[in-house]
Image: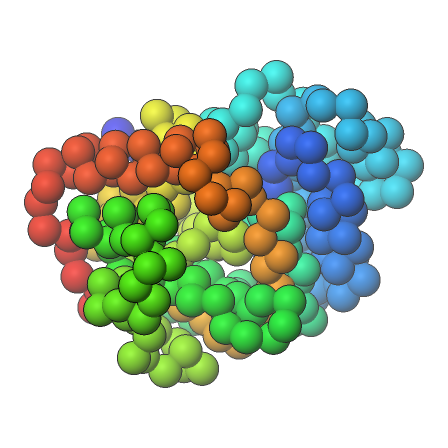
Length: 270
């Protein structure tokens, strides 16, 4: 079913969500406005109030940021609210624990303008030490979900499931056609969202990006990795800290993705 969105009046809408991450968010916003893009963009921040000072920070330090309060937490739900409040031709999902490097926004917009068959694209993602974080990936299999989201991955590093999933044998300095792009920095064409639909809000913590890319590819859109656009990802998510509650929620979302698509073979990247 198609999704009706407000008319686009800008090149790019940067959609961010925040819950108890003011310090990381402030660093991310500083990186955005310290390196202004040539394209016309806006920042839409969906914030779950937590007393962390975000409600005071934004009007004072970043008055151009559109602040939208939302009482419920859920990544897909909060991102959808940001999309509904956006006005860009392209919609960039950007995590609060990222640092945007110079030229990132312009590189993504220019790439999408030049490739009308691409529904979504993502940036090259670096860790704080400068090493590559594999952000352009192939779809999960059931084995990949359990290897990547349980201690099994630490017991068997560099295993064949990880290598295939992360496309580790591809050249990540070149544009790649991929299955899905990790949501830390992921751009969607407004027209593809209107056709494919918003994020599935049944995903509480993670896999909403995987699911959206899966559906986009079913509609014939390409998904691409664009290394000319770069970010640093500081990885503050709680699911990265062992088998805590949020890691368990993430694993449940992985199982939901697998069940939703009826164990069918994933469409391959072109």
